[in-house]
Length: 136
Image (cartoon, rainbow, N blue to C red):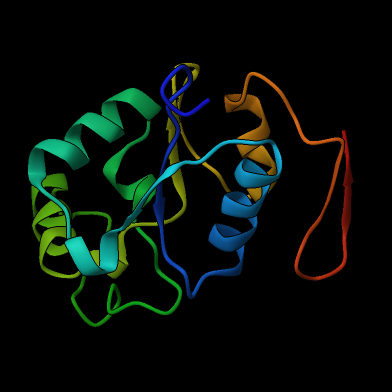
């Protein structure tokens, strides 16, 4: 199924939302390509392509919570996009997650249920880590 319908998730295993999105993908029967971006890092070309495909601004992809964004001065609205991308390349944790790419598009999957809009079939039901049941 993966070859016919490729799914890639840019994943942080320490993030509950990312774990839930990955579990939803797998519960739907997919074997996704899992990119642990904290280990692999980012390239400028990949980040710019993902931003373009998602239709997001760099600032919209910037993760503030649990990151050095404030310490690096990135929360100032006058900081240029190029400087934020440079910081994301140096500190991959600054990129919000999970990002999922499928033939239906690319999205920042927050909340994790957003991933369902990218799949061509769904699991019957899914229970998130916190016990919330997602009925489909």
